[in-house]
Length: 227
Image (cartoon, rainbow, N blue to C red; front, side, top):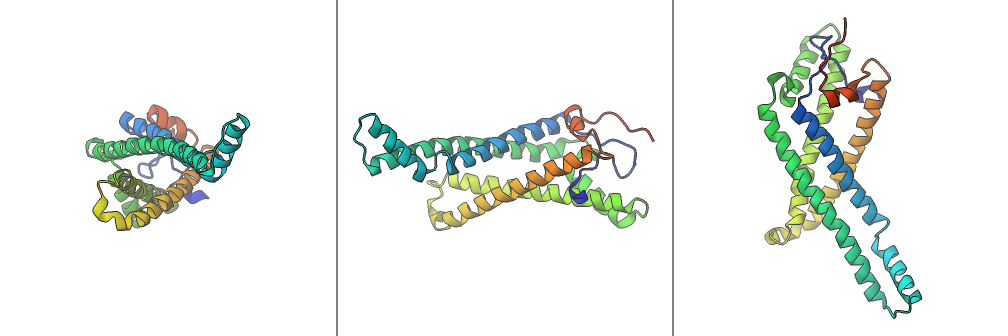
C-alpha cells in the first residue's frame, strides 16, 4: 500500500512542503463533489430506480390506491424516474467537462514548480539520477504516474459522456454507441478504484510522516517542515 501514499514533502529539496495553488485546491474539491454526485446518481439508478424493481413497486402502490395499472404503464413510470436521475447525471457530466477544461487551462497558468507535467517530469528525472533517497523518488514517480492515469481516465470519461449526451447529433456514429457506453462505464469503475486507492493512500500518509497532507490541500501547504 506504500506506493499509493502521497508524499507531503518535495523529494528535492527534501524539507520543503509541496505548494498547492488556490485554483488547484478549488478544482480538487469541486471535482470531488462532482464525481461523488455522478457516482451517486449511478448508484441510485442501479438500485432505487432500477426499472425492474421500481415498476413492480409503482404498480402495487397504485393498485392499492384503487388505480387500474398495466405492466406497460408501470414500466413507463419507472423509466421516467430513471430518466430523471440520468438527467441529473448528465448535468454532473457537463460540470465534470467544465472542470476538466479548467484544469487543462490551469496547467498553463500555474507557477512553474506547481505544474503537474513539470512535477511528473521532475519525478522521472530524480528517479533516474538521484542516488540518495532513491526510494522516495521511486515513490513520488509512482504516485505521479497514478495521477496521470487518473487525468487520462477523466478525459476518456468526459469525451465518451459527451458523445452519449449528444448522441442525436452523433447519428453518423450510432454504430459505435454501445462500445462508447461500455468504455464510459468501464472507466467509471477504474475511477472508482482510483478513488478508493487515493483515500487509502491519504489515510495511511496521515498516519505516518506525511501527516497534514489533507490540510495542505485546504490551506495550500504554506508551512515548511523543520529539518
